Image 1: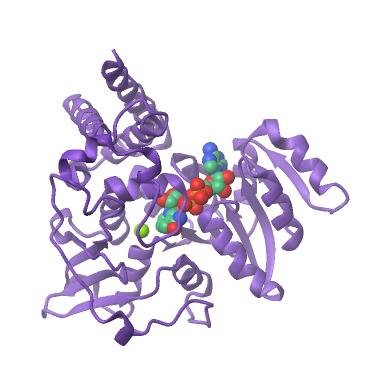
Image 2 (image 1 turned 180 degrees about the horizontal axis):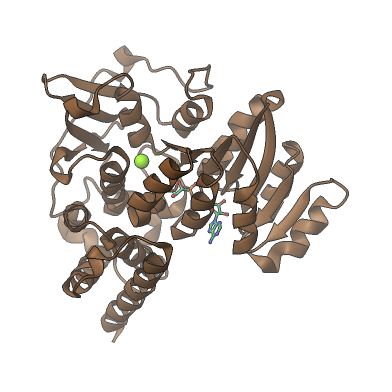
Length: 390
Ligand code: NAD
Ligand code: MG
């Protein structure tokens, strides 16, 4: 039986993973399930999957978790250290689906134990790509991408010689405001930004899709995971979101990955890798779909794409700065402390401020250095937000 753990089991990716594992219950031994605030979901899934341990990141919710699992034989724990301990439990396959920078440390720990890490937590690659890739190599672990675009690129590259890749094209739906008047973007609400035209995802990533900060993260993720240069990475708006990515080779061929809007495809591909097995996803009827459209992204509408290229060119710890500033700016937008368009202005400014500080982007990518620049970027972002309020 395959031993599996799911970090961030109560979230959107986590629940899709629980669903796939629950369908073939007898093929898996579930080791750890983790969550944060949705304790009732965590309790229900831990019982359903007979997990060895259930962990919440929030110590104040431990009693509730313990009470819900009393008599089940399932261990319980809470807090950041408990998450890392859970990541050290032997498992063949671990889903990394915590949201935000909090996903990095459990992922790094998991890699130390020779596992397959299915990586949905894109923030890990954005903040610490080179560290993650080198730790995987050092400990003989494998990282598989779960983000749909990167799963698509990975699948397009099976059997190919990486040196023949000319470009990688990441598709973007354009998010909630693709057709919104540009001049009215300043005034859009959190509620409007939380509606995705094609995908059903968590709120934060949905807002990041509207601002294209999500795509910006994915461009950086592409550079870090596949080792391509920033100038080889392109973005194209594809409103139907059915082609998830394309890889262009030096003979002019473009390999496209086409699939439904269902994260269970990318999750299932990683879960079954290196095999393909039946997945409960819709089969596309191309004649019914009729046509697929492609548009050049408007950089005035999506400044996050320009910031991503700046971050990729600078390299080093700039990704960690970018991610922290973006997380903090998103918090501020959700809390009503800045406008939708302020987010990009603030993140761009914080990246510039940090890049102006000598040596920072050249410092080595260690957890300590990442934590330091993360804290610095969050503080600078808060200062920028406070300036708006005054
Ligand atoms: P979500 O908000 O729905 O779920 C996040 C999970 O992380 C929950 O289980 C929550 O309990 C847990 N969590 C939150 N804060 C935590 C903390 N501080 N410490 C520990 N655990 C914490 O998010 P999601 O949409 O499932 O996304 C998860 C990751 O996958 C993100 O990195 C996202 O960018 C990526 N991703 C998501 C999708 C999607 O379709 N939702 C697609 C591609 C990539
Ligand atoms: Mg994606």
